[in-house]
Image (tube, rainbow, N blue to C red; front, side, top):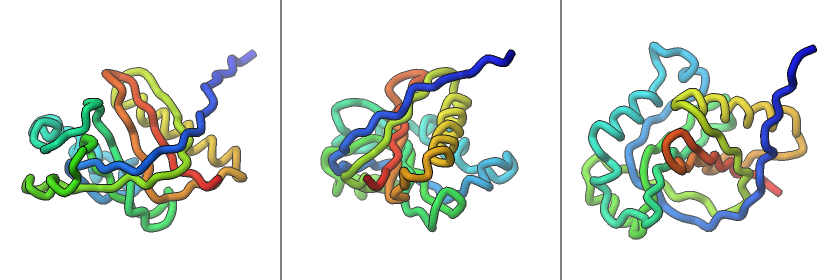
Length: 165
């Protein structure tokens, strides 16, 4: 007899628009599966080693760090941008920091998937759950506008995936 692992169902939330500033890379999921060309690990290493969370002006008050997925070429198989950053209260000031990139989170409906555990595996596992969820629920359509990871603390993430309701 095999054990069945159950995960909490995603919650549906309405998110108002907000902005995140930080540093970005363009990648695709197929590239991230190959350690020789993967870019996300390097993005996050650079974000923390260069203390980007402290360099950005007018940071949002909640102190969370975000990973924002945007500028989708098509769907989960196409290229997209990933920005590691923090919410900014005054988005126009982000351009004052050399190398900073600003992305605007779209207002709308999001499904929220949570993960806990050791980094980075828990984020990878949570995204695997997300892909399985959408494969098993074809009636739920992703928007492919902006999606984001909100890091709630060490080893805890909430991944917000934009959907069309």
